[in-house]
Image (cartoon, rainbow, N blue to C red; front, side, top):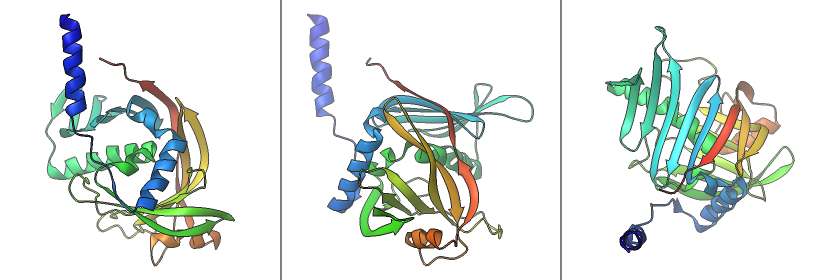
Length: 259
């Protein structure tokens, strides 16, 4: 009887917990994001551990409702194992299992390096996070295909170091992400042609693992645009140039067990 009482108490407490905050914005935009998440199988990521390799670096993303831990593992010049982590408690670096202190600049660099890869890998799951703000844009045609478009920005509170970034998603009629564009803060003092502060992603491959659709991308940019929503025309008119490829290797999704 004791175990049944504890189980009943657990259920009651869980029912009393407030739901996690969700994105705000246009009803139409949020509906398109929901459709995209359904097509991509994002619900399977709510309580899961996702492992993959990106440009030779292993990542482990663990998500359990509102609790998360995103980590990458590196080797430093001394051959030591370095784990860099972003979780609910903040940003961390562990060297051979021992946490070391980070200054403000290092904290921002680690957060950007880990969180940006996690964000792009998990798309479109993060688009309904509490800090997200969605707005419907006009439809657009790219390479002969018609798309709905949704702009996503972020509130400063819980929006991370890069909350000022702006995203536009080109969504197919079935909800699949066809393209997306974003702004970012270029490295101070870097005047190279590649540091335009904008990117446009062109799909080059996909795989469905554990019921979740993951995509690979070719990164392009342009020298000048009135706004990232103009990337579709720039791409069709040959005004973009290549930057890099974003390819995920050895992807695995493991559902977390109930306690």
